[in-house]
Image 1 (cartoon, one colour):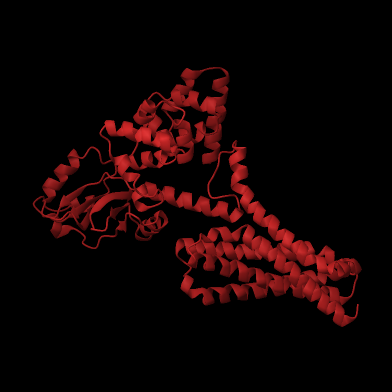
Image 2 (spheres, rainbow, N blue to C red):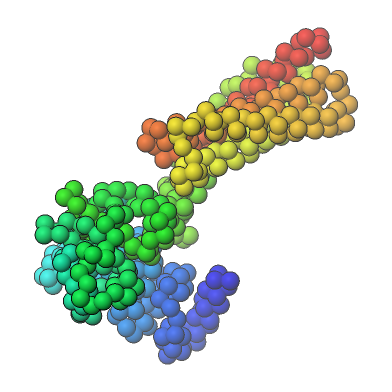
Length: 453
């Protein structure tokens, strides 16, 4: 539904651009949400992007549109603008969004923009850039409300009313004399108690918090587990440095899911512009090289069996299905394990239990499809039952081996602190293809030799 809405907007804007009806486009843009504007503008080429962006009359809305774009795309778009214009737009954004975009600038441009931001007395962006962009510190916002534990509810509500810089005041954080985080309370609770009540008497002392250097994916899991609207970010002294809000968590989940899907497909680690052929080639070529090398190894594996393949040419007919069934079930197992690791439902310490479950699945499916394909092979080949038996046994063994690779490889990589998502693409496919062919020809050779064919 959302895609249809965006496509309708794109088609409408294209028609109005052809007629040079810029006033009409301005009216449409004035009624369109910044997230939809970002999606629509991103569909046009660079020249039209610039024109359409300038038709957004409000600087604040322009900044929101840039915040809704991919950070790399927004940075590429801003890099062509004068520094003064870049600074003006970044100042209208939330500090964490501005820092993310700034992190994609070239080193020289980043320094120049930071220096200009400094002249405008805005140090938040520079502070956020001290942290890794994929850490809690890198995605947090420094705008939050923290009050001393001895402050009364009446004074706290007064502070809230005066806090114009805090756009998302989900919780009120409580600190002690040393500035350390000691409690939290919701705004709902704040307005339901007597005005003279002291914060330390009503606060929740068991605060769910994250450290500034915690990985953003761990932060997202924590927020999802406890159904929080925001989570405080603390330093080594337990002093609150910022908060990660639920909208940033949604972005993290989407980003991490996209990254995992692309890695599983062997298409790199991040989305690239559809019109960027060079970037697409650069992202995909390493993974295709892995596949190419893997299949070349398959050629080496097959070569000793060339004579047998010429004599028993029926075997060649079933090579594709042996490889395909092994590859499919191997990828299925790897995808299940990778997703389980990402969501926390798969425990690396329970490797034996997890493998045993997947192995039983492989044995049942391997036996079922092995018997099915082996039986069908007799109808197509009109050959000895030995051929059908070799195909059935080979398929069953190939599927078992594929599940073994697909299940254990992601877990092993995770234990080595390597992203397990990379295992589900070319690595599993290539390994399963090579092992499947080796099993097929080994089993076939043994059975044919025993039968004296």
